[in-house]
Length: 257
Image 1 (cartoon, rainbow, N blue to C red):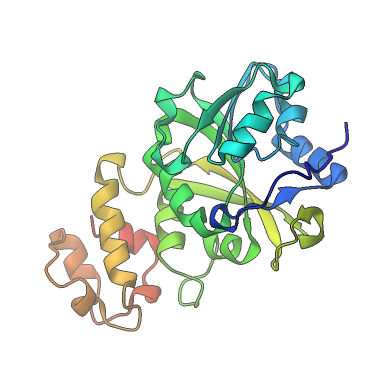
Image 2 (cartoon, rainbow, N blue to C red):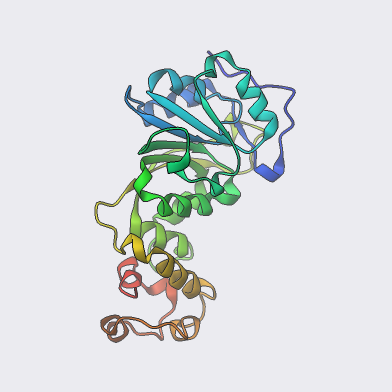
């Protein structure tokens, strides 16, 4: 069934709404995700259900989180989505283990680009409850995930994500397949969890704060941005704190916890 745009819907900038409108791309996303009969799927931002309606017949159970009340009403009235567990709310306020679908879930999402980093950190905070995640994001942000040390793109997102997750660049998406048409290219990234994170889950909050503080003024030396923090003796001896944050590898940041 080809995707037909619901013309009565007003696109809301505050929620970064851009709906997929290309059947061939939708098919490619489904092939990339490769849903299986026993899968439990969580979709972030289903919109009008263009991707949802293709995946739900292929899996064991599916839930979707949508913030727009008008879209909630629309989704609830689609007969092909009668088995979808719809959650009205902000994804960043949701706990996967409290949702009406068993876990670990596989996650898919065409998300508002202005909260991409927040959603990736949300994934890290709930590592125990998901298996993999396919997230559509701005191509420029996707490149930051694999940025090299010492480059302008290398920053907090690169370091924190690389400590806990592996990110695979699946493919690039043209602006032409969205309604309304965004001004940027997009990409789909597959996230999987590292078998052994570089920093224990229990130290995530401290680690994230250290990295955030280090990059808060990226042109300053670490001795200034990390003043007041205490570090393990070995790390304090091995790392020259006159360096700037973008010169530290992910492993060196991990050693600061």
